[in-house]
Image 1: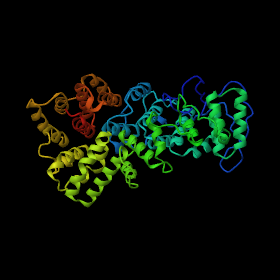
Image 2 (image 1 turned 120 degrees about the vertical axis):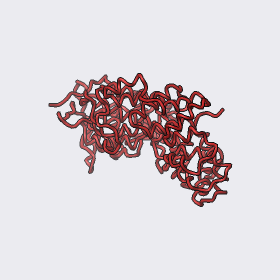
Image 3 (image 1 turned 45 degrees about the vertical axis):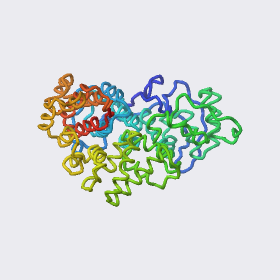
Image 4 (image 1 turned 120 degrees about the horizontal axis):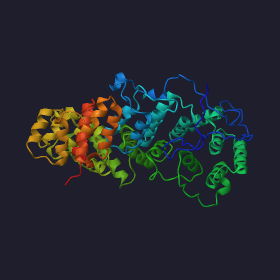
Length: 508
């Protein structure tokens, strides 16, 4: 039997910047809207239907993932008896700029195929929360892949899928589906946008006039739509004011009328829109750097953008591009003198921009086995230990002789040596917390009952929350978070997070 839609006054998402592209139907009879042109893949009507049907007994979207449990190593019953709302609340409580090791763990969890929570329902509460967390991180490719796998056929999921498509440059496909599937009940701005994208300008203008007559759009929406449909009429007028709430839909329309909005104050997901090769090189670099900091894109993608051409200016971003290009050339040549000349500048430039972990992922492993001059061994040590090849680095000749024993022991997972270092009494609060995390047995005491009851997922999210401030985290919280991750089987992430905290801490 069909399931009723959410009421009109219920929010579709906890994310405030999503476009309102679908709406719950009103009890009044809908107006007779113009039909879109019958061209290939465009529907003949945008008139909303009154209900959305869902097949009872269909597989839960909360169980949908991209990577099976057999690959991730995460237990299938990871969520235990924790309610969907509790898991969703824990996800929404996390910072969008997690330290790289924790961001990697979150992506692993969010994309995993796991048994749904015990109270899973057609509301898809956990699935929506997983998608929203990926959007908060700026991981749009992964969010879209997850939505595609689940089929975004409900209003709440289509809202997310449509906006991701706008930001990834796939708005034509999203509009095609919207116009083909009127049961999604698109709002007037979304219909007008999609009719115009389909080339049906007459229907779009008529729909705008209908919306004006019904007084169902705000003055700001009305002004933006009018310029979007006929920008030449407003060529001599001042630009529109920046919207108080920027959504992907009005972001794209501002771009279309030649009044693009600044990305600097917008959430991470909007930076993805600037990665398009149709944009300028500098905006693409800036966007890629922002997304690389949160792990939303691979460092290799940032490197590819860095090396597209030679910088024609200096200062700021151009100094980073120049330094990374010169360092990469030195590494390719495997010239110790050239590496010694270029490595310090690359490390300093990227560290100042918060991109040293990204630089480590790009080149840390390539430094292993390379003859290095002593003056650059400290920088090489940092990059190698921050890279995925941290354990091999700790056992190589690349590491500086005066590397702290704790760093080397953590990288090796050598608990005995960590204990010996702790007993020396020469550790500060942060180092002591890391040492205790690797020598004490069991998880954080306040999370132990949760774990014993099988609620591994919630315990993991709580542990991530403890450490989300990175090297600035409270030492006891860092210790408890690391202990819990190790106990839950995330030893690799725990070691990488410990190294990240030790290496990137502010220097005295």
